[in-house]
Length: 620
Figure 1: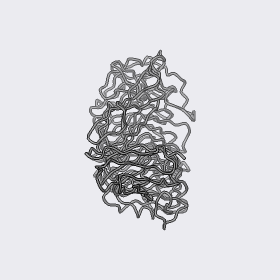
Figure 2: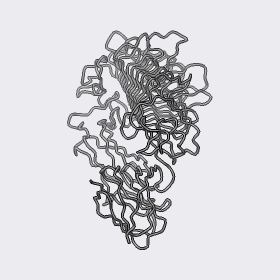
Figure 3: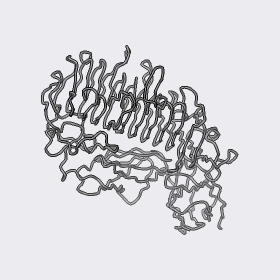
Figure 4: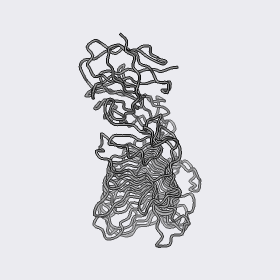
């Protein structure tokens, strides 16, 4: 017999047959609604009261005039993160106009660990824009935009926090008149900091664009094992990148410049300072592959430190003092400055260094002689011969102008360094590295990647838990000079890990996305979705017909099917649209009219066990 089943919609996130949910909120919704896709809540505050560990709150397009405080949600963990995200690529604006956020707080603030704040635009806060409290370790702010805030754009107090792909501008507006007069206070663009007694641990700020900030651009203070990398920072009132009293810090592949004057500010490109008499001093920090130009000082080190390593950077044309200024050399120990290009075209010095023995120089290129205390073995005096004329005032200046031309004296004149294996753009450095941030490649050898397609070794993109799947990156053009790539996994409902060679090991059932990123500076990437099913005995056959389906489909299961079966329909990104109990080996399922045409995945499961899956095409 046939069993006709009337569908009941469920919106489930982290387990196909279990408890975590997706909720939706929209300015046109009602708080008396169910919170489903078709019946969203109205306010973020009310929606947050419904969330538990593992849930996702999707914000639909529109403006929300409310303070967002994420707290009081127990059980959140690496396997059950709490996600607050814009839905797909819709424009979601959280506007603090007319709201009093409260001193020392932010318009969007989380005190819950493993929070993910994704794709939101934050404006008009009378304090900070986004804040990750100390009580929110392992939280992330991804692809958010913050602007027109009175203090700091994004503030991280939490250990293991990550701020990636964000854009911050018109921040620290309390000082927007450009004339600092104490007790006036300014904040910054993006900041991770705590205290010397309780340093913030393992924080990352990467791939962000920060500009027109009336305080610091990006800063870390009292941080251990922090990373600031691949950011574009320009037009900042104070230090563009401020590293204060940090240890084991990595500052790499950042592009910093000033194209205009910001009031009476003192914009230092990279400020590496100890301030105050703290026991937590700068120690074992690394500054490599950065490009800085047009600041009052492009690099300014102040205070004692141990184990500072400055290599393969390009510093060009400061406007106030030497391009590189290093104070307190006598208080430095085991510090190195090598393979750097330092240029000063006007009457100022390329570099100024206090006398002392704690900092060693070698294999640097200066465009003219200056400070005898900065002289070292293998140094070069000459024009680096960049491929373009440098003009810091250009509004759309790009790092490519700092590439070396074929006649550059910097080519092959650096020394090989174990932890500097590639350059600013991701090109590999050979055993005769060039001086400066950019490695030279001839026109013939610098063909960049234009496309990456991911393919699977075998005939299926489905993999069982506890097994492996080999991925291959097909690169176009085939004669690209640098074909190195970086593999990563974006966990959806499922979970997996991937090796540097593209081998996926499946851990948890569900959909995941494999990502591959070019390392040649082209910015090209690729994605591939994989379905993970749980290894299980029993059901191994499910027939779906017709497929493509219009308003219904029929299914047939094999006779030895286990009981308590649940059938779900999921989007390719892992969003569960429907979940229903199956009570017969034969059935006909009605497709709701509100499910749009497209490709979906049908899962057949019982408890946490996924027995089978198939793709379903809906085409009306």
